[in-house]
Every structure is written in structure tokens, then in C-alpha cells.
Image (cartoon, rainbow over all chains, first blue to last red):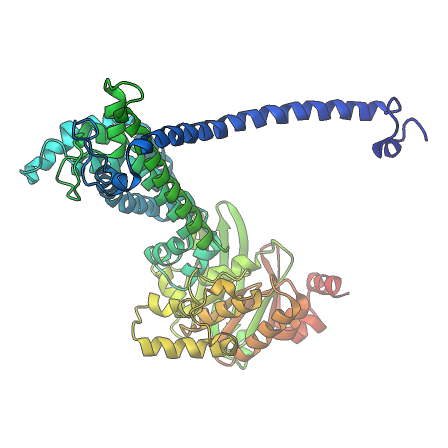
Length: 317
Length: 260
């Protein structure tokens, strides 16, 4: 065994006989471990935060459900946790959430998809370079600004067409929420469509297709999984959006499927309670944990559906 | 080299064809005929411009900015200049089909892949579509393998089957000229043999232009061969003559270098 033989040492020579080169390697290993450990800690922070949130929500909700029966929570048609005659029917808040989200998605999905098709298949490189950042700025506007935009601008405009529209409505909040979500949908959808390989487009053009036919008959079907993912993200944003509905939809719990009415959503109710002066630990205060857990379950379900759709419509190219 | 003395009518003819990718000239004054119902092979080393030449015929270069054609490709019998700016590239592609290097079936069912070209042309009659899809799949020697699963996604087929599906897709619209851009380079030898056999049958009804890297393939399937080098057409002639006694030294070097 010679001192400079790397192979001898690399399969485990006795300590002290390590060549200088390997010693350096060992130091590098140690440093890489350190960096690896640091990176792991950083990643763990976000995972632990999520687990912590789940823990708090579940723990407080368990106390809540010791006072309120789950059956009542899921079936009662009134939500009056702050009244003397308290009722805890989450359906009331879910209806508000669903209606405002539906309005928002009715705007965001078609508009976002059309913008994505335009940017990916029709726009020249120059137009795309200008239009995309502008669109992304729209996604960076604080939602509270959107909320007051809905209340002060969109609602009065809508009232000119629909005179019976109240000052607070799911319709107005939902429309503005839809505008807010457009950039999320369009940006992800465009990425999905641009990821469709050029060979597929060439094949379609070679068959004598027009641009629109290539876009609609070939590129969109090929990008299905990415489009579905962008829609799911849009739905998650709509369901979780807080400030716009808190400001513009009115915070009155209201079991309705009519967007022309004011209503509270799960998120806007949480804002209302969290800002109020309810004593810690009271049932009224605990409601926000139950509501939060419901919200978490809804978004979790959506994410699972998104994951499943990704798998089902996975691109094959 | 003289098209007038040839027994077959000319289907298409490149005349002083120059092509530029931006400022780079990729084809230099190409003059070459394609004979009707014959297989013409383009051979040459990578980067010699053979795919570029092939893609001029269906104006694929129009899809990317900065590309420029000079000269003409005259398409018979109507003497249309395919490269004229007054000719709509979509009209050109309605008459000229193309099969690509890598099979590129659309994300649709087997049936819809073959029906695609007809649907693009506005055909809605279910019976016409059914008949045409069946006929095209038969012509592409794929019918027996897929007739019980026409609604399956095209991606579930093997590579060779996918390529035959792409041929069926191109055949469904009755093209006058079929362009093949290295159609077998992504396929195994058995699938390659079936595609070659298919091309041999197809030339009874359609003119074929094929780019190939495989010289044995050119020798096996083509009636005419063109050797290209650095954007120039070095030699064009009957395949037998090109392979047995090439007139140009460069052709001979290329063929013998690869075949030995």
C-alpha cells in the first residue's frame, strides 16, 4: 500500500493513513452535510408551520365540537354564533363562499384561458414581453385595494344596470375577485400551453390547420393537465380570498345562492370575529377555528382533485 | 438530369430555390424535379439542408419569423408556385401531407387523429368520416391492429404504430405529395421495415419525397436520389445510378464512406 494510492484508502484504510486528497474530501463531506442540514431546516420550517396550523385548528375545533354537535354544524341553516339564540350552521358560510367563488371563476377561467391562448399561440414575442409583466402586476395589487374598488366603483356601475342590487353583494365582490385571479390562471395556463412541444403544433399546421384550429384542437387538449392545475389554483384562491369579500360582500351570514344578495363567506366571518372583542375561549371565539378547519378541508379536497387530474391527464409527449 | 427525357411526368419542380434562416443561407440555387408517383430520397450529411429543402414544399418555414424563400417551387398540374406570397400556406398544406421524424399523434383518440384533417376541412358527415378513417388506416397497414380500439388514445400505441397512424392521418386528406422527414429514425428495425414496405405501396397513388440518414434505406425505397452538401444540390439522378456509378466525386465519397 503506497501513501499516494487513492484506491487503497477509498475502500476504508485505517485512520491516519488517509491521503491529503482524501482528507480534503472528508472536509468537503462535512461541509456538505452542514449545508444539507441547513437546507433541511429551512424546508422543515414551512412543513412544521403547516403542521402547527393543522394542530391548532384541530385542537380548538375539538373543544368547539364538545359544545356543538357536528350534525348541527353541518345541517343547521342558521349561523348566529354571536346571538343569544346561537346557531352554528356552517352551510350558511359555505353558500356565501361557493357563490362568490363561482362568480369569480365564471370570470377568471374563461378570461384567463383566452388570454393564455392569445399569449401562447397568437401574440408576437414583443407583445408577450410587454403584456405578461403587466398582467402579473395585476396579481400583485393588494386585495384590500380590489375590495374597495369593488365597493366604490364596481357596485355603483352594476347598480346602473341592476337597480335593485344592494350596496354589498356577492356579485360585485365575485366579479372583482375574478379579475384578481385572472393573472394566476392565465400565467399558469400559458406556461402549460407553451410547454406543448413544437412538433405537435407543426403536425397540426402540416395538416392545413389555421392558428385557431391548432390552438383549440391540439394545443389546449395537450395542455389539459396544466390547465386543470391552473383552474384548481384559481379555485383555491377564490375560496380562500378574504379582503375583497369582507369589504364588498357585506358580512351578513345569509344562506343564499343568489349572487345579488349580500352574504358572509367563511373567510370574511373569520375576519369579523378575529377583529371583534369576543373573550378568548368562548364558544363564539372557537367558531373561527371550526370555520378555519372547514376552509382547510375544502382547499385540501381541491388540491387532491388537482393532483388526481394531473395524474389522469398527464402529458404523454 | 434532364427532366424532359424522363418517362414520368413532373409533379413539382424547384427552380433556383434559395432559402435563408435570417441571414444564413441554407439552400443555394436548388433546381430539382419530383416525378409523379415516384419516391425521391434526399441524402447528405447533417446540416446539408435536406430537411430545410423538404420543409419548403409545405411552407413549414412560415411558422417561424425571419425565414425567407427566393426562387420557386412549381407544383403541377396547375403550375402553382408554392412559395409565392399570394399562395396561402394553408392551401399548400391542404394538398401536401407531411410525416415527421418523431411520431407526433395529437392528444386525441386513434379515430380522431385520422379524422383530424377532414374535420379541419369542414367534413361533418359521420359516414364519410367513418369510411375515410377506415380506408386510411387500411392504407397505412394499421387497420387490423386498431379496428377494435379506435376510441383509445393514440399515445397508447407503440412507436411504429404511432408513425403509421401519422401516415394514415396524412393519407386521409388525399394529398398529392407526401413529405417524409426521416420517418424511421426513431423506430426499431421491424417498425422501419413495415414503414418502408408501406411507402413502396403508397407510391402507386402519391408522390413521395423523403429525407433519410440511412443510405441503405434510400437505396431500398427510392427511385430517385438527390445528394446535398452544405446547401447545394450536388447530384440528382436515378437511385441505381447514384449508388452504382455516381458522377460526382463528393457523392461517391459520401456513399462509399458510409457504406463501407
